[in-house]
Image (tube, rainbow over all chains, first blue to last red):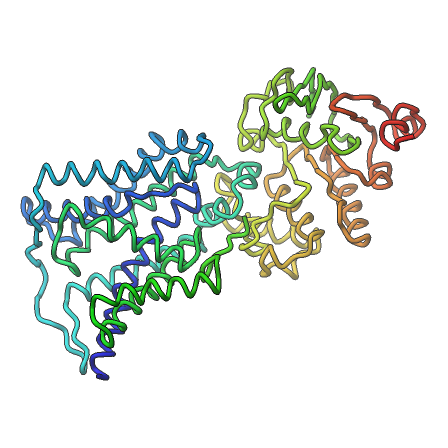
Length: 292
Length: 235
């Protein structure tokens, strides 16, 4: 049981970090613009497919592919911002308008991928050593270890960016008070476009490495990640990017540890039960309350 | 530095919040604006710094029209602004509040940090530099908001009800800060219900009622103006 629990905890932290990063991207976008990007998981799915095709067509491994994925998703985020968001923000209810728009976009992306590549799951030919790492009674697949290492470094880099750079401070400031940022000379449009780029870059990075942890790539995989991302940002606090990491860790740990003691099908029930409990105790989420 | 407002009109539906208002302010003046609630004082400030777009009239700063500019562009021209309810970044430290808006500054990191430190010392908030914005009292938040405005060295500063709900000791400190900044060449437009403070600080006063200017003059003149007494003091 001890070994099982240890493996569940490590696996939970690993998954939690992945969920957290997906949520952090979503939370930056929501926090800065109050835009509900319901296609977040579909962007992750696109990144996973891109990695697959990079691997099949050009024999490029996922980590090397990030050199393309990171700037590409950042740029895509900025373009999507300028094409859509200012118009959505002018609507009477930007949150509902953005939710419906991005829900539509998620369906379009899924349908296009389905038409282009079919519904059969695609599996990445694993490009790294495949021996399971054994540390005492802990077993860790190299794919998961790589993904965890990269996710941890990304979370650390995100924290340094948000707290140590002027651009990061400005993003935290606009999350807390959009009006105040305008009157101290910051262009909210430019900052929002950068924030959208960062949000998409984070989900692109995570999606690119998803096949290392969850091998099956399908057109319908995005929806469950979108749902998970929403859960972790509500857990961690809406509008707090680092709160999403905490929310992701709680969600991942709960999901994995509960699977030891209960039937596997019940583990999502426990995760959502924890969500309800936390929301009842702290409606603003664990690190919520941005001061707006 | 000069700011000229001509026939400024702002409507909200059928309500005319500012009605053909005209005035001018020159460099190193402290212009007070008084008037009953709903007389258009804050709306006037919101039009000057671009939060609201004027329906009619012109606003020119240094002889350039600015009424179509966005608030961040107006801030870059050198017009700073504080609010009746201070808009500090509550989940950021006091020091971060000053450093968050310097994104487009061409000055080096060390210079910006030193500038922020000196400003915090100047307004006596340096000992609280690592406290979160939300941990400050209402009056301290107002002072922090002014210090944040000073980070980008504006020539004209619009203060909206800076003394409302502020402890008398802090209020006196606020007066000293305004006098000190005025001596250093800053120009102020001061909106306040606190008449003693306004009389103390202002070189000229404008009185608004129902969005219209009903009087303009020195403190002495305004105190004796019958229309002002009737509209503002209700007798």
